[in-house]
Image 1: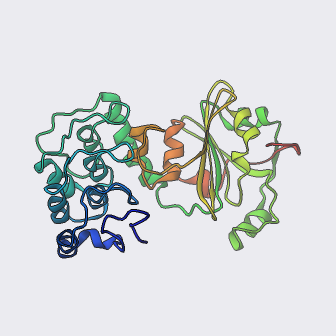
Image 2: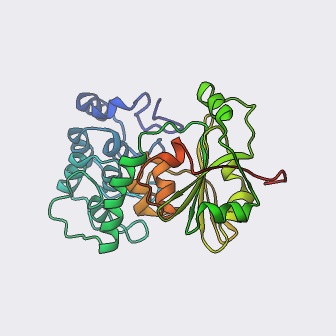
Length: 317
């Protein structure tokens, strides 16, 4: 993938690996490439190197730019390095004068964000986490270990806080079915078999609430399912679309407050900065964490569930 777009500033043809090649970077700079150019994807050279490059390249670019704390897409290069778990790149930026305490996302600075990372935090940064945030960080590591190694393509889920399976069944006017061994066998043989009904799904109690799951479809995330489940509480729904990626939604007390979200994406001002950082690349665990669910195993998404349920036939869109 090429980074140069309309105005490449002399960086056309740079790919992911190029930002680790100090010799190539110096050659481009000698030829007149602009270290401050902003019209690149995924950002100016220093930002791209902070996330994808080597500390040597970061240090070279940092001494060439006009402002080591220049913002792009709402964040500095130091934030990008910390969010991407690139501690050596982050240290190179701090050594070049980048400000680790510059607030940029809902009160979060690169220094505070570094305290959430399993990689060593930035030297000399006195930023601290609250007791509640420390608990959230610790829980993220446990939750990822429980859920982080699952095949997601085709999975639909609804994580609901504060209600159990019995209450979910009541709210949805669903029927509890006998074990669907034939349906399970069909899915095991062909996970993308379109013949499976979208109204049949799993329901499982987990600490903190319950989960509806459908390994073969988007059923649990349909708006009228999540809205019905969310009365008086919060529901995070996701469909892991094999064609277009993870599609998330947040419903609170029958109101859709977020749609076409991207659980597991990087931290941004549009979502919960701490959760988005902790669960980057961990879409499934993010859904559980957002709803405050604390599963002790992966049974709610891998089976066997507590119940097979069938929703009544009506319009769920």
